[in-house]
Amino acid sequence: MEKILVIDFGSQTSHLIARRIRTVGVFSEIVEPSRAMDFNGVKGIIFSGSPYSVYEKNAPTIGKSVFGLSLPILGLCFGHQLLGEMLGGRAGKGKREFGRAELEIKNHQLLFDGFGEKEIVWMSHGDIVEKLPKGFQVIASTKECENAAIADFARKIFGLQFHPEVSHTKNGLKILENFVVKVCNCKREWTMGKYVGEKQREIVKAVGNKNVFMLVSGGVDSTVALALLSKALGRERIAALHVDTGFLRENESKKIMDKINSLGLCELHFVNASKEFFSALKGVIDPEEKRRIIGETFIEVQKKEFEKIGFSTNEWLLGQGTIYPDTIETAGTRYAAKIKTHHNRIPAIKEMIQEGRLIEPLSQLYKDEVRELGKELGIEKILLERQPFPGPGLAIRALCSDGRQEELSTLNLKANDCIRGYNFIARLLPVKSVGVQGDYRSYAHPCLLTGFLDWEEIEKASTRLTNEIREINRVLFAIEPKRIERISCKRAFLTKERIERLRQADSIAMQAIEEHSLAEKIWQFPVVLLPIEVNGRGEAIVLRPIESREAMTARFHSLPEEILKEISEKILKVPGINAVFFDATHKPPATIEWE
Image (cartoon, rainbow, N blue to C red; front, side):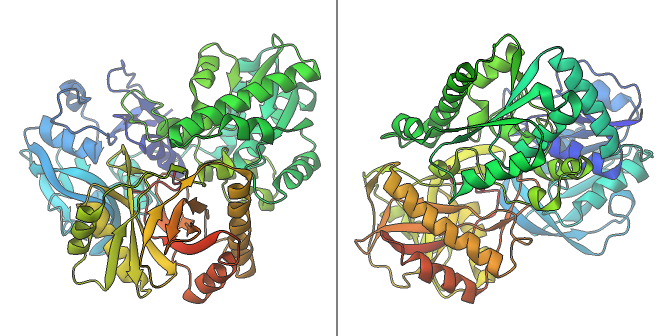
């Protein structure tokens, strides 16, 4: 079979490259650069990005013999810089770029065949190719990066500083299609239907004569995983457990139980374990610690229910609906950096994987592929188009604090100087959130802007602040109150009172997007509770509507002012809430969830 080989240097989007190649209809295989490679059937090679810099001492690399194969090669971000360095050019530090950039195309041969003069692309880098190797020419540039796209047409070797694999490079898929079809001359033979057949055979072989006990959250991933397992093994060999952690949305457990039972895929069990989860998380502040405890508590609850039902551990495997972003963000490949520990990737789970006691049929797929697979399995559209909701639930949307204040006056001056000329006042908030910048995890402050609502100006200020000030990885805009005199951090932990406060605010936001027919435009809408007192009272709610396809990149969705006003007015009536902010940050540099 013809295939494209993706060399994984540790990028958060390495598997996304392979996923996009499959979309074109061509099989793709991912390999580590240190592994012996089989080039049988290989029609082209793609070098991925990486959290490393090319010039770092321990940076991953690949043998120069790959250039003697006479195969087309495409380098992306770090891969682009690695090509430049290995072929006689030079890579070095450049101006940081995170988010949208305008690409000016100078040569339309092959990669940019069929394109206009300018394109919107997605950047996430701090290094550049400073000097071109012999035989290369610049085929496209951005304002901040002259060598944004380079080519040696004679050898069919190309380098792109931006990421065509992410959905926010507007015509990125077309660039990859041009490489695969026009440069590598591949035939389009891969389909999701073929994948389903292959996966069923894999499941039957992996499970053997055992059965599967599936943990189901009721989201798209666990529902599709359950359907695939049921199709491969049969209903009688599957059992499932839904756990109410106490951190679900309003009436969520009942909706999930009704939905899963209606599908008739297996025997479904239920347990309310909210006491166990609140007890385990009492006094916990650190987001990584939260995720670890939640994951371990899930396993403890599962074991107790397993024994209560009377199942033998020798006859059953544990099943999860883990998808690829969960794996890669938890440093799931050799060169990847850890962004956050997903609850389904804690050490206990990794141990089960090594011992062959766990099955995750979707672990190599992205959210959009999972939805496509669900359609192939006949799951109704209304179930597949539900907004993603994290396994830890509202626990990672309610930030906690011991109340200690941090001196931020110097950074506030720096932030306001950075956006001089914009009609905003900037203040760093005395809390931190998780971000992803240049394939690395960041844990930094959000910056709050106050002023007049102008989405274009807000986006520009957000991009400038996160690109130029390393201590900022997220930018908010104050919806209410308009006048802010004082901000302080308060002592706050995970309590039923705070979760109920957040649950009410979340319900208001979800109801609003349904009433205004925005559900199809907004891919996910986290609502976050901050332990922040504004003008001496209450806590703050953050609205985080985003647009995405696969969660590896995202754009904030700018809600109309009248809808924002409607939502904030209702949220401010929730007892204990005194402020409503809007998260105006793309991914990168901010992750979709705050923790």
